[in-house]
Image 1 (cartoon, rainbow, N blue to C red):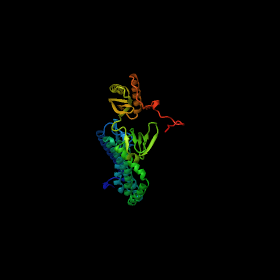
Image 2: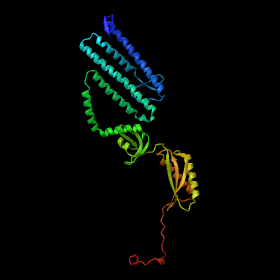
Image 3: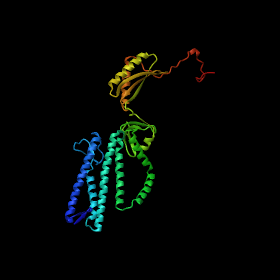
Length: 376
C-alpha cells in the first residue's frame, strides 16, 4: 500500500513513484505547450508582422511562419508545473528527514525561478508590444526590458529566500539603507540616467537629428542617447559628449523637427542704378531653375524679396527650401554661382561698400604752415 498526495494506492512505492513522475512530466509538458500555443496566438493577433523587434534577448523565438517574435514560455512553465506536482508528492515519499528537507528546498527553488523565468519572458514581450503600439516609446524599450528583468529577478530572489525560511525583513532594511547611501553617492549618475529615460520616452531629440545647444554652442548629429550621456557627431567628424541631464535642461534647436527641410536665404546686393523689376525677374527665374535642378533644394515656391534700401544699394533676399541642414552649404554655394553668372550676363554689377571723398578747389584751400599744418 502506497499513499501519495492523500490517495492510497494498492501498489509498491518502487512501481507507483516512477509511474507518477512520468505522468507528471507528461502533464507538465502538455500544459507548457498549451500555454505557449495560446500565447503565440495572442501575439499573432495583436502585433503586426514587423512588431517585436530583435534585441529582446531570449524572451522570444520565431514561430513556424517566421514572421514575428513570440515569448518562449513552454519550457519554464513545464518546469513550474512539474515542480508544483513534486511539492505534493514529497511529504508522502519514504525519505529520511535531511533528504526530504533538501529535496523540498531544491523543488522550491526550481518552482520559484521557473515561474520567474516565464514571467520575465512574458513581461519583456509585453513591453515590446506596448512599444509597437506607441512608436514614440520605441527607443526606451531596451531600458524598460532591462528594468523588468532586474525587478522580477529581485522579487524571485526575495520570494525564494522567504519560502526557504530566511527572514527577508532585515535584508530589506539593510538594502534600503544601502540604497540610500548609494543614491546620495551617485546622484549625478542617477540624474543622468533618469534624464536619459526622459529623452528616450519624450523624444525631444532622436538619433540622426541635427541639434544646436544654446549653452556652450555645441552642435551636430545625435549619434546615440546612452544611460549617462549622449554623443553628438559634428560636421567635421568629431564627437561631442553631452551629459543627459544637461541635454534635457538646456535650450536647444532641433533642425529636424517638425520636418527636416528648412529655409535657405541667399542675399544679393545691387546698386540703385539697376532696374529693380528686371533684377527681381532674373533672380526669381534663377532660383526657380536651381530649385528644379539641384538635388539639395526642394521645388516648393521659391521667392525673391527686396528687404533693404541701404547706403550700398538695394538688398534682395532669395528664399529657397533646402532638403536638410547639412545640404545648406552646398545649395548656397551653387545658387550663388548661378546668380553671379546670370548677373554678369545681364551686365548688372554687384554693389559693394565705397566711400566718396570730395576735394575742395585749390583757390579755396587754407594756406599751410611751415610743417605742412594749417596756418591759423
